[in-house]
Amino acid sequence: MRGPDSAVRGAVVATLRLLPRVSRPLTVAMGAVMVASALVPTAFMLVSGAVIGTLPRAIAAGPSSGAADRVLVLIALAGALFALQQTTGPVLQAVAAALGRRLTLHLRRRVMAASVLPPGIAHLEDPALLDKVAMAQGVGAADISPRELAIAIAMVGSRYLAATAAAVLLAAFRWWLPIILVIEYLLVIRTFRGEFQKSAGVLVGKAEEMRRSAYFRDAALTPAAAKEVRIFGLGQWVEDRFRDSFRTAITAVRRGRRGAWRLMAWAPALFFLTELFTFVLLGRAAVRGEISLGQFTVFASAAGGVGMFASLSQYDLFLQYGAPSVLAAIDLERITAQPHIRLSGGRSSAGLPVHAIRFEAVDFNYPGQGPDRKVLDGLHLEIPAGKSLAVVGENGAGKTTLVKLLARLYDPTAGRIAVDGVDLRDLDPGQWQQRIGAIFQDFVRYQLTVADNVGFGASADVDGDALKLAAARAGALDLVDGLPVGWDTVLSRQFSGGADLSGGQWQRVALARALFAVERGAGVLVLDEPSANLDVRAEAELYDRFLELTEGLTTILISHRFSTVRRADRIVVLDGGRVVEDGSHEALVDAGGRYARMFGLQAARFAP
Ligand code: ADP
Image 1 (cartoon, rainbow, N blue to C red):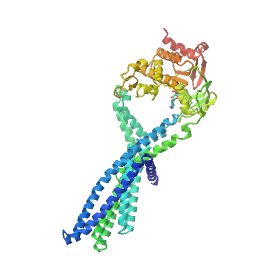
Image 2 (spheres, protein in one colour):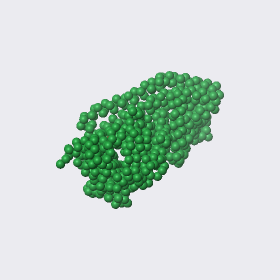
Image 3 (cartoon, helix red, strand yellow):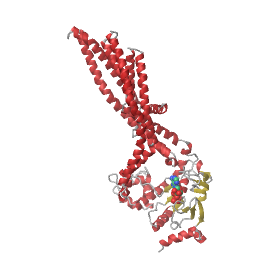
Image 4 (cartoon, protein in one colour):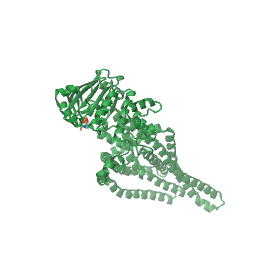
């Protein structure tokens, strides 16, 4: 049982170390209030003991005696302490919550940075890592945020301090008594926590199942799937799947809790016997006159106070469930900082390529896929700088994969990609990615302003001309002018004053984004079928326009339609993970191979 318990302890220690970094003043304040909230009840015990100790003498001496005055003063003091005791709890909660909110923000930012920093994306497809991300966000841990964890640390911590103070008081009666009590209480509570920890561990193991149930929940609640959920009548189905996967995850947890239930049956009996023993000791000492009435009162309440070692509240659960998320966040940072995820390379790629990019005997399979599932298989391909190249092939031929490797979202499994003779793995990955402007088939429709969709933070005032130029070249300027507040219009109906665009309009915005990237230093442009929802003729027009706009740049056009890319300087046909035909449109048609056949078939459909 040491494992889970020490894991929580490790997480609590890690959190405690983080707190001063998040806010030193709030951490100091929290510590001070914790100590106060532990000492005030102890002081209250002492003062009430003194009241009861003095009371018989005061009664005997009469209401105008000095003893009676002393009792009144003590009662006033007890009242003040009582009032203070009532306020320390809420104040501690508030301070811890303020600190915890900052902790949440701090960790979220670290989790985001850790997820975004790696230049590659392989880690985002690794289920184990995705579980860590989910955990780090508190999702896998019953939605307990670091904020609640901070509150729990404060509350549980102050409870232990108060219990320790009570134990010190009780030691004045029999030094060994609190030692026995504390050991017994801690052992029982440790067993208890161990049981709960086990079920928390089960929940951690079920993070994937939890993510699945969250996916179904989101399908029902968010607009993304709203259309299909209705049209295909998926409502009930989504709801059932949500319930099933949630149940699978939670049933295991419930099973894990059985031990805790058993424990709950015998622990109270043990506690009862212990308290009985303590009070018999105290009562006997009082009857024999070994301790006064006042001392009896103080020791009796101290014995009760030591019992706080054995109490479990919701805050203990917050500790159990919340702590793993902090460790996961820290872990995530460590994992994504690993060299194979961070990707190697530090050489500058400014101005590259001047001559050519060469794929040399490149093999690739996606992470987690067996070596027999090569997507690229000994691929040789030279992409000359300043020219246009079209890559055509059936769906699934590996065209997008080729672009992902070029953009260094993945590294080849074997072989190498060389830019002007330099291995891509030796170039600074972040800087190289800035050299690439790509529009993918699933390009992102950011729910941001048009200006941000094109320029990402380039202000319309500062970079206005560049933005306008990019939009004009992409044929998007009229569209922007027609929007309610021009460049500042948010492209989503989910925000007030927002506007929704048609598929074709979105394409123009994406095209403007790629052209703006050229202004910002991108030298290699890729158009990876953002036109899949256009008809053949419109796609051909889009590609022709793109080629005109990017004349003199290194451009790569991807299409599964052989008939839309004939204006490219050079065309390669991809099949089985390698290049099977290579040449200009005319040369390929003359060669009478697959290109010629497919071109003939597809072009016939839109021949005038
Ligand atoms: P194309 O762009 O030519 O249509 P892709 O490069 O998208 O082809 O895909 C090539 C093959 O790789 C397909 O069999 C596809 O299923 C597989 N694939 C694509 N992306 C992934 C991924 N992230 N993980 C595993 N397999 C993938």
